[in-house]
Image 1 (tube, one colour):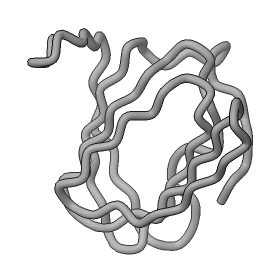
Image 2 (cartoon, rainbow, N blue to C red; image 1 turned 90 degrees about the horizontal axis):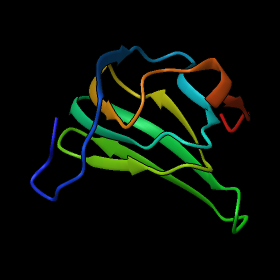
Image 3 (tube, rainbow, N blue to C red; image 1 turned 90 degrees about the vertical axis):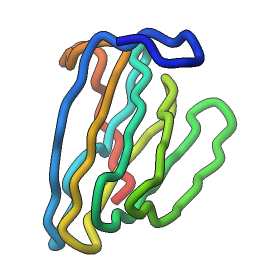
Image 4 (cartoon, rainbow, N blue to C red; image 1 turned 120 degrees about the vertical axis):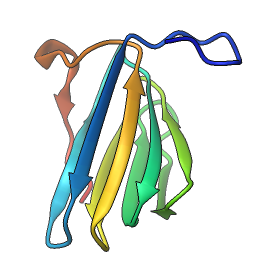
Length: 103
């Protein structure tokens, strides 16, 4: 899959979350880049940049598009029933998924 800006992504996934606890993330990747599009709902999102030490918390809503680069810890908690489409530079790999709890 190639985007209009020329970026190529080799993996696509759909996921959903319900309120009540962390639903995705609490990890980072060394190689993988992910792009998420929130189809519906609201997610509490937490990010931590391993290189700068900066943390950023926000709420993602339907229509938001987020790029998660390598070495950016990411975690998501549903505030309402939420649906997301994600594309990534690589398929899931346990060797490139490093636990780091934010939420």
